[in-house]
Amino acid sequence: MATRLATTMCNSLKGRPVQGRIFQGKEPPQFIALFQPMVILKGGVSSGYKKYITEKSVPDDTYSSDGIALIRVSGTSVHNNKAVQVDAVATSLCSADCFLLQSGNSVFNWHGTSSTFEQQQWAVQVAELLKPGAVPKHAKEGTESSAFWFALGGKQGFTTKKVTQETVRDPHLYTYYIKEGKFEVSEVFNFSQDDLLPEDILILDTLAEVFVWVGHCVDSKEKQNAFDIGQKYIEFATASEVLSPDVPLFKVTEGNEPCFFTTYFSWDGTKATVQGNSFQKKLSLLFGTILHSESNDKSSHSNQGGPTQRASALAALSSAFNPSNTSKDKTYSSNPGEHKQRAEALAALSSAFNSSSRPAAAKPPPRSKQGSQRAAAVAALSTVLTAEQKKEQAEAGKGQLSRSPSLDAHDGNSEMGDPLGISTEGSVGEGESVSENDEAESQLVDENEGGDQTFSYERLKAKSSKPVRGIDYKRREAYLSDDEFQTVFGVTKEVFYQQPKWKQDMQKRKTDLF
Image (tube, rainbow, N blue to C red; front, side):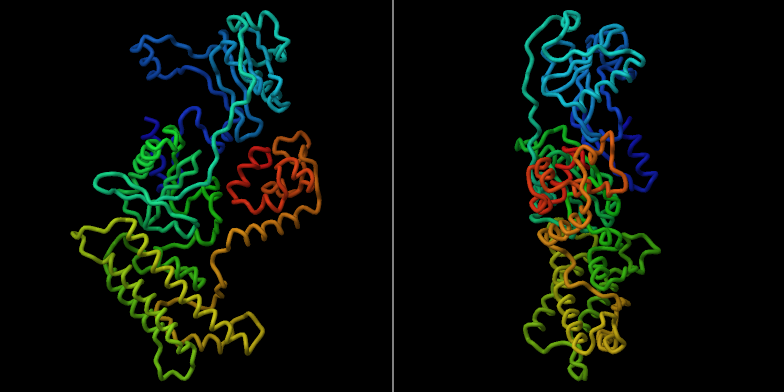
């Protein structure tokens, strides 16, 4: 019922919301942050639960305000603090956490020797929620009263070690295909935002979560099966003992990526807003203009005029890359190597676009080959056009120092004929993507510039009792002094900002600086 209701709500909003499937005990940080406080109690009040315990003849252990209940309180930030009801026995205790023991009208606030002050404060808030107005009896580990142990059925030994955190590893991006009826995946190594092609469905596995990213050019039936694809991947990965079967699963559609998805990429918001297929988006980014397809008034998946449009586009590109030899303006070099490069680009583009104009009855090639073919075509186009524009900018720069395009420069480019209706007035950067090292260095510069003022760690925390005002709350860590930064994170600022953004965010969540 809940799944059907969520799907109906998502469809009513045209598929824009992120859909998630979450199991108890595997709640991700962004889910926990929605509930403050988040308290998970045993049992249930739904008719389905009541029917289940009746059919199975199992005792009903649903929480009641006048019964005996033991609740573990863990976590210190809004992204990981939750209270969970556990078995009311002494062996459930742990020195690293705080516990609330409810026995009739009495409430004991027990805190282990390794628990933090924030956990103890959080336990008081949960006690007030469960028993409004009741004054909890504080019990430190080793000073428990006989009434405390009596409610737990007697004193017993319990663990004094902190529960180890789940293994952390780098995220992996996959494409999928069906081979002889079996689900198979192919990894996209050194992935970036540019690998998210509108015609594909991709799977991002972070170990803690699984995302199914759906491009807007994907067939509508495949879009509806996104969760099934994600479940097949989880079963595939679980078989090799890599993934938990209860891992959270999310469906993300192109253009509606949430921050907890984009954090695993060097995300560029301008790329995400460009409309069209892979070819159109690449051209738009190269020329600084968003293309508008003539078929926008009709269905985006209509094939009417498709071959004609492709043929026209290829003819225009061919004309652009092979200018007349009688032209007086020698805009393009006569170097044979460059002509060969243009020819290879055109061949790749022709192969990519002609492949999609086959009759509908023909058996389509595997998805991975289609994606690779398009990627190769787009990469070839990017290489040639970027190289050509660099050359034009260099030649134009010899005659003037201004970055603004001059009329002469525009006339020189008119040899292209602008057959696709693309404006070339917008300047194109020398590279569309920035390496991780360069990005880390630029980020470090920004952080240092914002960190002229330093504040103590206690004031910069998200749950500080004396928070700092007027700072950029998205980068609280930048306001730490160098010494305190190394104390909190265990590394210097230089090393920290050279890490991928998702690792930075994970460490900031752990230290309550997110």
